[in-house]
Image 1 (cartoon, rainbow, N blue to C red):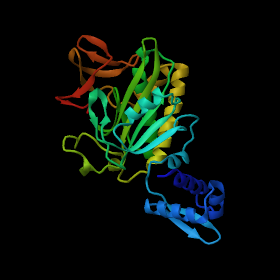
Image 2 (image 1 turned 180 degrees about the vertical axis):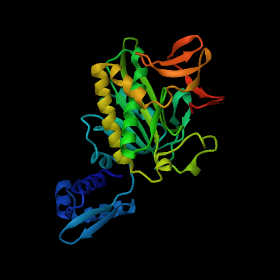
Image 3 (image 1 turned 90 degrees about the vertical axis):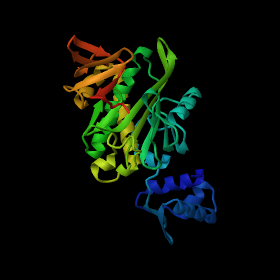
Image 4 (image 1 turned 180 degrees about the horizontal axis):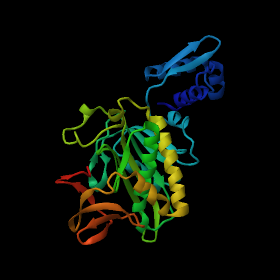
Amino acid sequence: MGGTRQQILAMMIEKGDGYVSGEEISRKLGLSRTAVWKHIEELRREGYQIEARQRSGYRLVFRPDRILQEEIACHLSTRSFGRVLRTLKTVDSTQKVAHQWAREGAPEGAAVIAEEQTAGRGRLGRSWHSPPGSGIWMSLILRPPIPIARAPQLTLMASVGIARALIDMTHLPVRIKWPNDLLIRDKKVCGILTELRGEQDRVHYAVLGAGINVNIDGEAWPPDLKGKVTSLSAEAGRAFRRSPLIAAMLKELEAIYEKYLEQGFSAVHKEWERLSGILGRPVKVRNASGEVSGIARGLNGDGALLLDTEEGLIPIYSAEIIEGCQSRSF
């Protein structure tokens, strides 16, 4: 969408159910009334239903579920997260765009959100199914003053923030699976990927990626994912507008991030365990050293998964969880 149409759309969104006059649009944007009308027609072709009334102006009647700065901004209540925003129609990976933006000096809290990813990335180099217009594919830039050794805690922190937002907005039983997934009824609905650049003693920046399946029909999944993944709409039986979800996620992420920086991982620890879907369950984990089975008991102070095994309680710092013979870290 062009910049001028974005400005006109923002003015109508700000008015809510009220009208914005053509004269006001012309004056603020330096356009002729004819040019305003042409932009309104373009918005209509993009799916916006706009009522025009003589001597009153223009009023938004219906807004399609689009990921646009103006749509997100009208729901946003954060101080910094999402206040600097790039919304893209199609991109290979929001992570890739965010890394470049971070190197160019993007501020903390800047976010990249796309309607579609053609080469979305998951953990351990896996691809991420990111069809157009149906999910939230987002990368958030952070600049935490922490050593690299603590960076894995950012993923655990983010899982708490996103889970809280999704539960609040959808009332679905979202649960966390260590280290980076959110599940609904044991099916994956969200994956979180944290990548960073830094030195041993400090993080220069981190890119926190989140892929949330919002309005994806069960029949749309590739064969290898069916039965393993789900979406918010499939679980709730209704569709969700994505802009309010994005704003809610950014609000909860900002709140838990600020708390984490002030109080350390202890501020995240208990909340993560409360929202966990694996504690008390038998699990098998696979890492570079092989496979270990036991009962998941919680997290230690660093964020490692505590596994109760025949050899005693051991911390697992980097691994993927296997349930039975089938990997569940898609």
